[in-house]
Length: 263
Image (tube, rainbow, N blue to C red; front, side):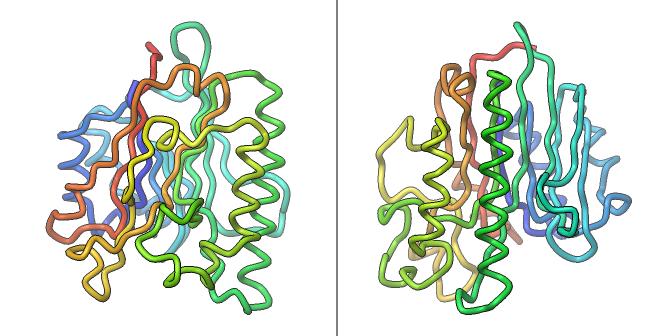
């Protein structure tokens, strides 16, 4: 089974790229972030025509997450538990039947949090990460394969960015951010990409500005975090970097994990 995460950066603006990629890569389950549209505006028919089920948790103009799947989901949950006041669309969870049980896949769009001195934005990011850790700990008790896939807006280690000096004061790399990310690892979650390679540089995002793409000045912020039961079934990972070279690309590229699951 092939599970992917991709921050599409506007699904309607990049629909042609999404369709071309689904045809080329043929993932079984896709976690999309930043769809930037309400549920009813998602180009559902175009994706369903390729044989995918579509589940969205959208928001007008920004944020928004989705799950696309060749399997029909058994359950869908929208919104990260822990705060009824949080109206931002950043989390959706799907449960899918596979041989021997189920696999849970979440699409996560973690807050950016910049600038760090903002009295609201960075505290919101850290609080969101605390809620994610609480959710993850609760799901671990089920002892099921779980994939927390998404744009984490976290650079885990220095070798995950092209220049530490350029990012050391950014919320994506600040010590409290990285510590919050490590709490997931300390719970027992595995970073799928780093479980399969130590290669560097290895990036999933290149800013549109300052020639970052042709210079390969990227960062790795798109992650698939795996419960022990999912990590046991991990075969390999890919970062489909060539998609960044397409016309009108997202600033992120798809990150893929291959598993020993059968529908």
